Length: 201
Image (tube, rainbow, N blue to C red; front, side, top):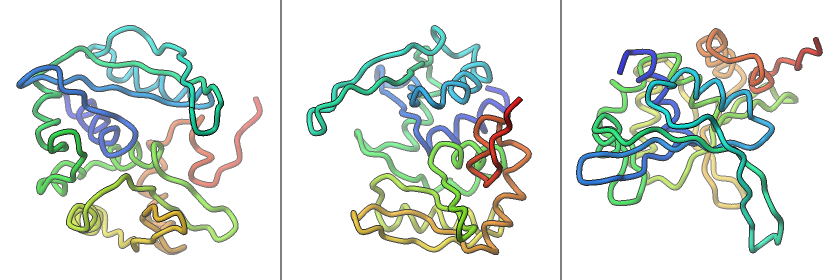
């Protein structure tokens, strides 16, 4: 796996990507996004094309709580020991974790940009950014914050929403630093995530 591909995969695994075990040493990368993010998922597919199966497919999921059908897109990679090694780092059984080596894995601004395109949000009124977190332990979150500090001199605060969900909140000053780092790697269809108005061509 070349460096650019690996950097994109690291961002995916921190964000919306899922590493599915396919044997003792192998795994596949599964990527899912909403229909609205079709261009973004297709970009991921093209960047990782030599590892991927068919192009993104449109699927339907039934939500029994809200009693609604949701359309989404999915693509996944072939099974590989390369993804298996990453799964060993990022998962304990079926639970996602943040590995001790995260500061080494997250050094690329491209990885951070992909993670932000997956799970980040820019709040226009206050000019602050957030990265939403899955269920992680306190130690996992501490390792993430330390990696952002060590790799990018970023200092987000951990914030708990009313729902109980956690996110990383970047102050206005920290958001400026974050955007400067990731902006060169944010694709056109996702630039609304750094506060840019979508262009109408």
